[in-house]
Amino acid sequence: MSTPTLPPMPPHSFFAHSRWDIIPALMVIAHLIFVATLFFGFHAIPWALWIPLALVYSISISWSINGSSHNLIHNPFFRWPWLNRLYSIILSLTDGFSQEFYHHVHLRHHVGNMDRVKDGTTIDPLSIYRHGTNGEPESVWTYTFYSYFRDDIGEVYRRVKEKFPERARWIRIEIALVVGVYLVCAVYDWRAFLALVPFYYFGHSLSSLNGYYEHYKGDPDTPIAWGVSTHNRLYNWLWLNNGYHAEHHYRPKLHWTLMRPFQQAIAAEQQARGVHVMNHCHALGFLDRAPPAYLQRHGG
Image (cartoon, rainbow, N blue to C red):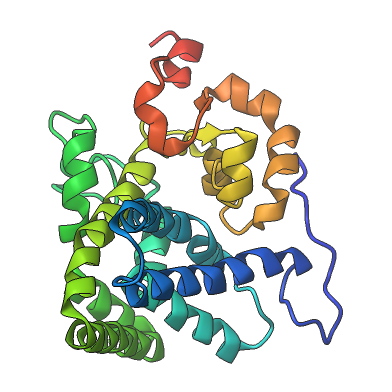
């Protein structure tokens, strides 16, 4: 099996991996402008328009976390570390939590790969099995609406500080920036701030819903089937190929532009090993009534 690779970038290139990263880079800026417009335009935008836009804001949080933010973790956009750091700060402000913190939680997610409970817990802090019972995934309802409150910032910070003290410092800085900027916004216009709070929480819940179905019906014991994929063209176009999630967990450093050719290269092996594929976006995973593909393939 051959893994596709990107051609090397020119020595003085603006981007570190691919010129196509102009797309997630612009997505980050567009998201910042959208969130600012929603906040500062609160009193000027009619309720009939503001509420639908606020719902779009909720969706945009999941879109950002699972798209541009996610790709910045695995393949930083730019050749210059300071510019990647600037983008990390912008993502922290627009998504409402430290991007550096998310970086380390997400890498831990790839260490455990949605593992089952062993010795009372899981390696993966985001595992759908961590709070389940009898070895089964927990309810999608509790995972979706409780996950936001389960982040153990102290545990993550201590673990990062022990190995990467400079990165731990950036967790502190980004958290301080988010809290500081949000407090200034609350003082500047408390009505707009409070109006956005439930949509902010709902956005993070939608991200958890997305994460649930990225692994529900996956096989934690088979690396090629750790994730659940969707090859829906529109979803992958909007979410930067996040639909190729089984492929991503199988090769997490593979650039987002290479996911489709990689899937085509391993399609036969995926089918043989029971990679589960749904027909729609992950957030609509509850519409998928098919049993796990690995059970179908292996007679479980």
